[in-house]
Length: 191
Image (cartoon, one colour):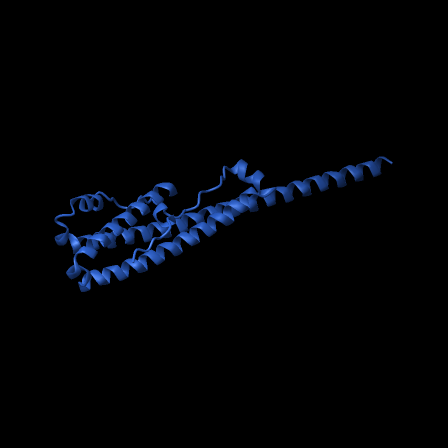
C-alpha cells in the first residue's frame, strides 16, 4: 500500500513537472513569436519611412524645378519650405501627419503648375511627376504591408491565452497607419 501511494505521488509529480515544462515551452514560444511580429512591424514601418523620404526628396526636386515660376506664390513657397525630413523615430501618428503635410505640398505645387503651361510641359517636371506617382504607389504598398502586419499582431496578442503572455510581456496593440484626411474626402468634379 505504501509503495502504491509512493508510485502515485511520483507519477503525479512527474505529470505536474511535465505540465509545467509544457507551459514554460508554450510561454517561450508565444513570447518569441510576439517579438518576431514586433520586429516585422518595425521593418514594415521602415518601408513607410523609406517611401516618405523618397517622396520628400522628390517634392524638394519638384519644388526646385518650379521655384522660378513661384515668385508670386509666396504662401505656397513658405508652406513647402517649412516641411522637414520625415520623422524616422517618431510614432505612427506623427508620420501620418508628415505624410499629410507632404500631400498638401504636392497639391500646392500642382495648382501652381496648372497656372503655368510652360512649366507644366517641361520634360523635367513631367519626369518628376511620373516619379512622384510611382513613389505614391510604393508608399501605398508599404502602408498596406504595415497595416497587414499590425492586424495580424493585434489579433495574435488579444486571443486567449496569448493575451496573458502579451500582458506580462508588455505587448500592446499597435496603431494602424490610416488614410490621410485629404484622401478621405469625396472628390468633386467641376466641368
